[in-house]
Image (cartoon, rainbow, N blue to C red; front, side):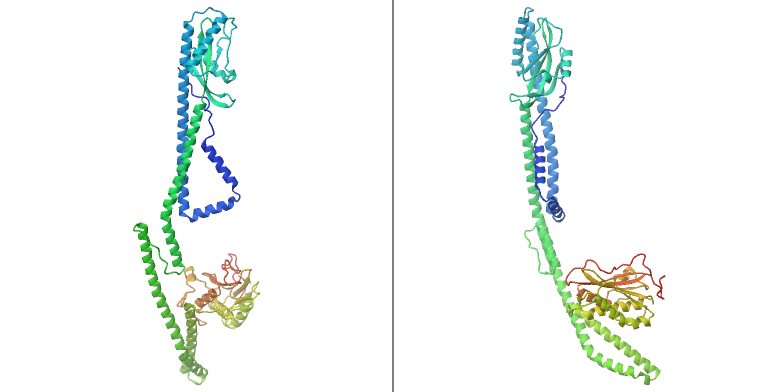
Length: 562
C-alpha cells in the first residue's frame, strides 16, 4: 500500500534552543550600560590569554553541541513520527480488513435499518482493531440512495479537517491507503498534532465508503519535547563543564606566565632582587629556574657596569677638578702673552695667539666635561625662576648678532607666543639657545636664520631654523651624540667642543621638556626646544612644528625670497 510523506511537520512544544535564545535576549536587554560591558570584554580579550582561550573553547563547544543536539533532535523527531505513522497505518489497514471481512460474511436484506446496523457493527470492529475511536466515513458515490447509511463524522474529526486532496485519492482507489498530517483538538480544545488515515470500505449492495481514522500524536510530541529538553540541558551542562575545565587548566598554565610577566616588569622598573618562585620539576619550573639564572646574571652585569660607570664618572670629575688649578694658571699666563704679542716677533706673536685660543677651548672643554659628569652622576640641579621664553630668546639673539654679522647671516625672531612666564633655569636655557643659534650660524651658509617662539595651554617652545646644507636621516639620529660631527673634514669656524648638543639635550630633559631635530639635505635644519608649563606633565605635542611645510619659501643669501 502506498504511503505518502507528511505534508506538514508534527506540532511540538517549544524547544530548548528557543528558550535559550529568549533567555539571552532578556539578559542583553537587562544590561543598562552595554558600552561599558563591550569595552570590558574588549579589554579582557586583548589583555587576558586565559579569557580569550576559554571564550574560544566555549564558543567552539557551543557550536559543536548545538549542531549535535539539533541533528539528534531532528533524527529523533523523524524516527518517532515514522514509527508512529507506520503503526497507525498498520492498525488502520488491519481494521479495514477485519471490517470488510465482517461485511462480506453477513447476509443482510437490502433495507436501510439492516444496513445501518451492519455499519454500526463494522465501526465497532474498526474501533477495536485500529486503536482509535476517532472514525468518520463518507459515501464515495454521491448519487441519492434510499437504503445507503448516512455519512458519519467524528467529534474530533470534523469534515473540514479532511482535505479535498485526501478525499479524492481515497475515493479514486478502492485498494489504496492514504494519510495526512493534521491538527486535532483534545478534550480541552487544545491543538495537538495528529494523523488522518483514509481507506475505502465497500458495503454490499450500496458501494464504497471512504473511512478516515484520526490518530492523536500528542504522546509522541511529549516524548520528543522531553528528549529535546534533556538534550539541551545536557548540552548546557557540557558547555559549563567544558568552560570550567578549560578555565582551570589554563589557570594552572597562565599563572606562572603571569608571574613571569610581573617579575619582568619589576626587573624593568629597577627591582633587581625580583625572582620567580620555583615549584616542582616540570617545564614551568625549568622556565622559572632559567629566568632566575638570567636575572642573576643581569644583576651581576648591571652591578659591574654601574661600578665601572661610577669609577669613570669619578675619574672624569676628579681629573677635571685637578686640571682647573693648573689650567687657571696657564690661562692667566696665556692671557698675559696674548696681550703682549704685539711686542713679539711674527712667529712668537702667532704662537702666543694660538696658545691663547687653544687654552680657551681647553677651558670650555673642561667645563663641558664637568657638566657631562654631573649628568652622568645624576647630580645636575635646576635653579628655576619664572621667566618669559620669548624675552629670554630675544636677549640671547641680541647677544649673538655680532657673531651672525661676522658670518653675513641675518637673525629673524618671530614671537607669536611665549610671553607668559614659565618656571625654568635661565642659565641652562640660554646655553641651549646659544648652542642652537651658534650651530645654525656655522652651518647656515649665510642664509637667514628664523627663530620662532610660540606657546599653547600645555607648553612653550622655541625653534631655530636654518636653510643651510642640512643632514641625512642617519646623521640626524646621531646629532646629539658626544663628540660626533656630521662632516669631520669640515673645520669649525666658531669653536665648540663637540659636547654642546649633548649638554643641550640633557638640559631640556632636566626641565622635563624635549629637544628634537628635523633636517634634510639641501633644505636645512630645524631644532625645536619644548618646555612644559607645569613640571611633570607629559608633552604630547609642541606649539612650534618640527617639520616645515612642503610649500615653505626658502630665502636666499641676500634675504630675499626665491
